[in-house]
Image (cartoon, protein in one colour):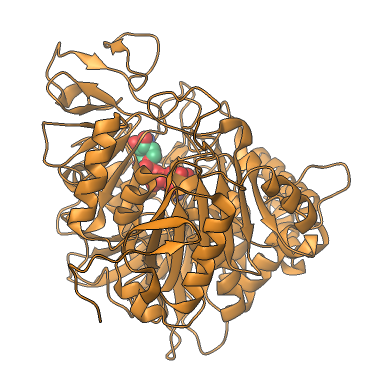
Length: 625
Ligand code: GTP
Ligand code: SPV
Ligand code: MN
């Protein structure tokens, strides 16, 4: 025990400890930090405690430097404009490193380039990292961040330690994870996930820093060592590249831990729906990046009598308990949500979550100290001056967008008006249904249900979506994004499908599996479904199926679809049910064959045979139609 006010003068080698007590860190953490210091050569180390004074100090520094601007319209809200070259995840520079290649990625067909994760050999990785990390923090502070994914001390939670030379990253990690010295106590002598992040801009800087946002886009590299439970990220300060608790740990590393320990780490929201009969259900849903998870998780229902509460909006860790019920937690503590499109009509609960203590990255700014992005036109004073995400004057009708399409808000989940009282329950919440979805402009009905657990795994494996701005992909092409996990797989996707299949056991209550599509369009390109709050109508049908109502569904080759008139459309006008639910035979024959080709090409011999069998059955059934 040491006095809070005692000045601890410590050094690791020649590097001074600017804050915290190195000697009181758990032994394995000391070894890890000493290794990072030796490698990265920072000017000092700063052991974070997660308290408010720390946040105030960091914010003050970032304001002074110009990385953050205060948004004076709200309480403790800030705008950050990044280097325009550092705005999204960089999938092409993200790798999994294992001794055996096929532990990381499937056997891809010869001549085809793999899309389900990228493997790098330990030798090549070492060569690449040796060109980046030595001395990479020269002249910068190294922050040591203790964090818990999931409630501190919950049996479902996991601990990580991130070192970073970015205080913006520290600020966001404080919101997105639980940063507290209690983590050191819970950790003791156990192992933790080692996270090393650097902006890749040692001082004196070699490249011109834009927007007070040091980064190194030419040398970005994000590597995962699942066997060593270690992550190294270089060159980017942006979200999924730098907040290592999120996609790197909670999905890529955790999916491997989950396979080893018999649970699931998924790119899923978790929400609760209470029906007018006062019955509560929890569901988890997986949509690819920027396809509607945050919006669904906080939905404002348009049908009377329903109540929605949010548990999480991006990642779910789920495990079957002793009585065979799947329980899920949200391992995160905040929302890192897509800003454009968010407004009081589409997602009032998100809007209310970020009125204070939030950070806005790459949005536009109004002259009265507010945020602005596409979708806020009706909620922004007319004619007010606007500065776009690049720092230039902007007005409606300008060529470019005001906010970057992947601009984001970072807000504490505790501020969400509909956060579930059990969102931090260490046991998690019981999951009744799993829902997949994506942006599918043609062919795919509003909702359908799998015929079995295995068939649901097939539906997940066939998830496709129009590309979005969350990563570096361009254009409107439809990409496969199986289980909404394509960019987040930590191991061989074929083995992952087998893991899902193996989860089914006779003594378990397997959740029902569904697929939804809010994005089908008519011949003029207009959405056929209003979406957002009206998605409650689809959830209502899903829950009636979970309760065993067999009168509302009919079997088709792709699974069960709603019988006509069984989705509550009361109060909605002009819904073209026939078009919304049609299953064009030729579209689906092509789609089934294309999915089969995709799995043959991308997953090859690693594909569980039942998956091909079910696809063949689907093709045969359509041929008979
Ligand atoms: P990540 O944070 O990248 O994982 O994204 P997400 O899956 O949480 O997506 P989010 O809810 O942020 O939505 C992304 C975009 O889709 C936003 O621009 C939304 O306005 C839009 N969107 C969400 N739900 C709907 C819907 O039901 N209908 C339509 N048309 N658009 C939607
Ligand atoms: C996603 O792309 O799915 C996100 C944003 O949630 S990021 O954290 O950058 O991955
Ligand atoms: Mn996401």
